Amino acid sequence: MLLLGSFELLLALPMFASLRQPGVAGQALRDRGDLALTALLPALTYFPLFILGMVALRPTRSSSRGSPTR
Amino acid sequence: MVWAAVGALLTLALGLIGKRGRPVFSNRWPLAIAAGLISVAVVYGRWSWSTGCSWWISASGWWRSSGSALIRPSWPCLLADLHPGLRVTARTLLARIPVSGESNTARYAAAVLALSGGFALLLGLDYAALFLTGRLPTAFDPLSTVVAIQFLPLTALIAVISVFTWKRTGGYAAASVICGTLLTWYMWRARRRRWGRGQVYSPHRHLPAKGRGPGRTRSGAGSSGRPRARHPQRLRLNLGPGLRRGGGLIGIGPAYSPPNATSPAKAGAQIEPGAGPVLASAEGASSPKAQAGSGPRPSPGKWVDWDRAGL
Image (cartoon, rainbow over all chains, first blue to last red; front, side, top):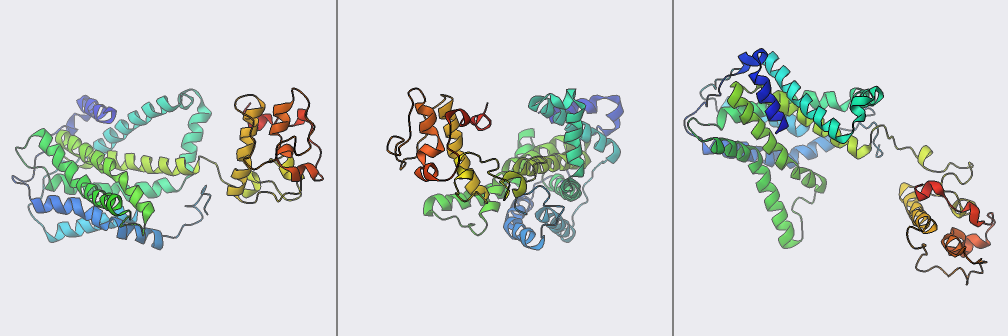
């Protein structure tokens, strides 16, 4: 709330006046395939990529700074 | 981070394959970056104010908080990863999901559904299976399963911020700046909360050193020949009764006595009238081994470990 309110107030300032522009929707009809793909892709790739990150990225000296499990 | 980076690349690749009408965005990056950063700074200021005024009134507090942020290498990595990732997310979301002529509610609901719906489905199925069968289907990576729960509110927040800023600026620049900075802050805070600020765990500091006497775990444990704690778990176990004993000593709670310990009278301790709680709570009294050992005989006056009693 605070963030969005601050953003709206900033837009009301003359300094940010040129930023004010209404968003124009790019399409007249929503493609359900797009919606499903946008929703499912992050969830489907979540586990494989998290495991890949854990396996592929070895903790380095700098990244484990302050960690008791180094 | 890998998930965010590869997800963004996949989204870009899919966007190239299914190329349709080019969405119209008006991105004024310098202004959008300034407005986004000021908005996040307002939230950060409010948060700092509510969590502690020291941020405002003491220069050292500010220096320490920002200094620890600046030298921590993770946040530039997070920023470099999350900003482009969220830029792709916001762009794709705003190009594909809003349709002309729909109501405000429908617009926000569709954006939230598009970003959080997959996670809601994944977690719903996962936990439904857990409650029905007692087994977690994603038990091969239980940590990521728990971590996924916070993706629900976070992705919903990204969706709301994206639609809100797009409706007012007509672009995705402000959304990507705000969300990238917020998420960097969130993840960096989560890291710091887990490991503590500047609290580097060191066995040399937290555990008694060899040949340095009983160390911080003083009283009977160090001097009665009992093996000293060399492992955090054991140290924690050793400190537990000590804390409770402290409570008993100063009259906060009942004096601690382990369930299997012999009573002070059976162990042959001399009980003076009025000094009952002190002796009953002393380690020597609850452990006959320490009483018979070569350690110094405890005197009631020395047994109050004020440090540990929290005074």
